[in-house]
Image (cartoon, rainbow, N blue to C red):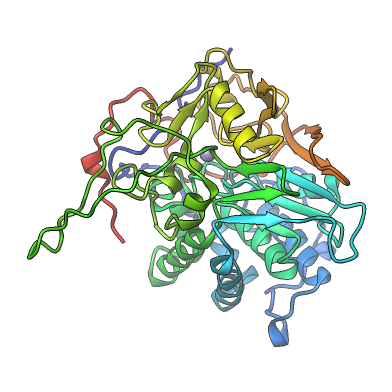
Length: 449
Ligand SMILES: [Mn+2]
């Protein structure tokens, strides 16, 4: 197998070194299928008067992003999507997202809608052309075709901004059909290390405008819900399950305003949390914390399954949990569920996980227990986009379809990458090893909000 330099990510240890990469403008991306000039879309995209999006507007946005990714330099992106239109889209989407609960309940066959299906999508990591293919392959969101995106829209791939914005436009157009959950990469620390911040600055300028766009994206990330329950029987989240947070008496002493009660993971025996606890977690954080009382968002976004029974701190990642098949059984049984569908691990991560399947087909069935199954779905084929070695994983991506009336029997659809991709420079130093085995220096990870 290949041994890539960019293996399982863990919490970044410190501010990234300047990548030393030329992300400034060079040649326009060399396209393999150059669009004839008559196919040039009408740019700039304009915000519809009244702010009501239509199917035409959303599909036009998708084809325009496809075109611009093949024909324009990154810095020409504002000629496609002016910052005012970006603002309108992100503001409208953010308002919808922030109102959603931490765990959204999706009831597909309801209000006269019958024969629904729900498409569950895993990590896409800025691979715009693969997302466009996926939407064509699965069929677009519609009255009876729901979508749950399991997070990790940005980073590593070169078109995280386009990918995230096109998903936001679907959210705005069909807020009750398209559900966008948060991934661990929808955070300040991941986007500052794995490329999205630099991508935004390359596209909107390394100035106030670019910084404004990046800030607005971070604000929108904070609004993304953490998990979903589909038809009462399928739990989906980017990483997985989460811990119970024991109630602790506040030991805040008088006159010591800033003293916080810190729960160390070692001091409390770990047990699974409840949906009531999940609903109360504070998700509006730039970076889900790995310590302190608000640990549920970090668990939901960063945890991994293991074949070893029990629940333990995810030392490899420095945040979140590892959970065994017994925990999957307890979780499914306690909450009367049939499936857990999570994402978060690509072929690089899976190469290092003993006992768990590889990600060649874009999905794995990790735990099979009396009450149901745990599944991992990963939707970025030929991942990562930038890799230092000649050898590539050549993994397929996959999405899952859940069908009416029970929604509990997953149908897997694997798909190949849309390649060759337009040639662009990466936005992070992908040759630099950010290795999961490094010891974490959490003191370097102070949240700046
Ligand atoms: Mn992830």
